[in-house]
Length: 405
Image (tube, rainbow, N blue to C red):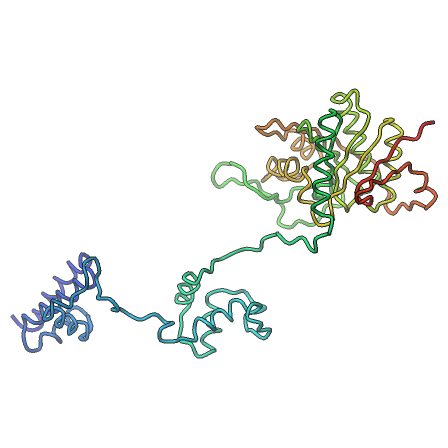
């Protein structure tokens, strides 16, 4: 058999069996074939299989020294195989950390401080520092070093107020007191404003494959349709919600009118013997703890209902703890996800049909009243409010009592 024919024969055998062999198995097999061929066998096997001559010589050494083979359960001897990059380049791990976490390393001049930290850019930055590394090697080092792809997480709420925890306990105690007395207790807030029109709405719905709802390419507001301002009232004791859908401005008058409508359409029937109302609200927005108009409008409501109105504001920066956020607003968002809010009727219906397995019931009404912005309340008008501040953080906790006559 000619040398050329022998090479082809060995190449066919190797191609047929190489996928069934381990790394060491292939090395031993080619070494055995080379030894059987005798002089020139190493080069011939190299040409037939493409395996490096050094590998074939290593295989010859292994079959000549069986006592030095790898321990049972291993393919390589202890310490065998290609050494890791950090073993050849001790400074690599330190420089990688400095590139990925420039703030931690105190390096304001880091090349990646103001760029996206992709593995390609990290590899480029390390190569500029005389390290020989590929993007895939960067990925392996990051993974082994405990790094992972992460998005931003909303957790920081700014500086904590000294009385923050105490206020939470105070609110909780007030709610329990109302519950024992079977008096109404509500959580109020304004939901995010929404553009009315055929716009993309986050979320997905089931449709025939390839037949999604087509919406406008851009979300430019439609001046004719405008926006809606949903102001919610959530009954903490009954798990029921009311949403007053305004179309003009989110003002203190709008906020109190929303509470008034809740009482007329839901609260009065549930609490026929109510003598006082507890409201939990954020510290900002239309129901701000510092708003004079909010207190003036509460006085009008207290006079109409002949009922004491107690208010408990959440400390600044803690609006996510307001129950209405995750018991009412989040459920509304889930109910209308993926559906274009193309008309006021659509919005009212989607809000009004929101339900949960825990028994949440929601009603909604359109409020087309024009609410004026920028109304000023004088010191004399504010003084007319029958307001009593609590001893504990009176700026957050107070009562507006009705004025008779």
